[in-house]
Amino acid sequence: MSERATETPGATGTPGTVGPSRRSSPGLTLVSRDGKPYRFDPGALCLELLPTGGPGAYARYEVLHEPADLVTWAGRSRLRDGLDLTVSEAELERARAFRDALFLLTADRAHGRPLRPAHLDAVNEAAARPPLVTRIEPDGTPGWAPGATATQLLSTVARDAIDLFTGPYADRIRECGAHNCRLLFVDTSRPGRRRWCAMEHCGNREKVRAHRARTHRDAPDTA
Image (cartoon, rainbow, N blue to C red; front, side):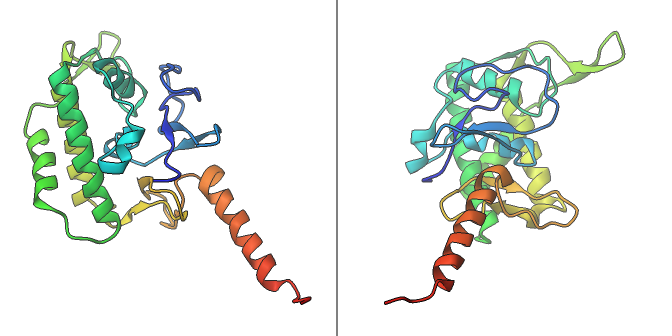
C-alpha cells in the first residue's frame, strides 16, 4: 500500500497524540507520506479499524503496539464518548488478528472476490461474544456500562461488520480509486458515486494527475 497513511484517528496530525474527545463528525484524521493530514471517513465503525495496520506487507503501518493504543483508537472512533475500556495483551493480539481478517474480507468484497471462510469465521466468532453494553445516564443521555473489555469492543465491531456486509450498502464497499491507495470505505452517499478515500487527498491528486496526462497527450509534437 504505497500511499497508505499513518493512522492518527483524532483531530491532530501526529501519530500517538490524543485529539479532542468530542468529535464534530465521524471519521479519522490520517497523515499522508508527505506529512499532510486529511480527513477520511470510511463510513462504518468496522472500517475505521482497518487503517491501524494489516496483514503481510501492511504490517509496517501497524499502530496497535500496546493495549493503550486500542483504547486510544476506540476513543477516537465513531463510538460514543465515555467508554471505560480495559485491554489485555491477549485481547490486543486477538484484535490485530481480527483486524487482519476483516481487512482481507473487506478487500475481497470491494473487488468482487469470493469471501473466504476463514475470514468469515473470524468475524462471526468475535460477534458471538457479548458486545459493549449501553445504558441511560442520570441526565437522560446514553452512555456505556462500566468495565468494558476489548472482547466486548471487538464483538461490537464485528456485529457492525455483519450489518454492513449483509445490509443495503454491501455493494458499495469500495477501495479508493487512486492508483496507489488501498484505503477501504463504504459509500453511503445518496448518489453512490464516491471514488476516493478523501477528495482533499486522493481525489485532488488524481485530478491533477489526469490533467497533466491530458496536457501531455494534447501537446503538439514538435519533433
